[in-house]
Length: 81
Image (cartoon, rainbow, N blue to C red; front, side):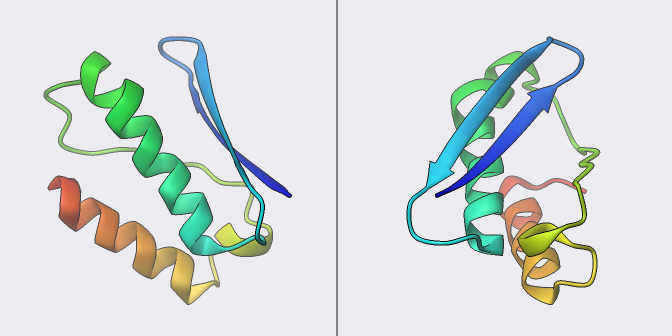
């Protein structure tokens, strides 16, 4: 199992998703997508950009091309910078 989470510093709230298949960039970005759909867009309806900090290990490392590609797809999907 691979847990992924989003912690919103401003609202002091969190979201955790647990993947049962394996650690992947798709899973980590899907966690962000689901947080946004369920919590984020309600609280921040006029958001045009995000700041994402990640632990840089495993599937969300800065050298992992799939991680960067999936984040870009999500940003395009949500019209974010």
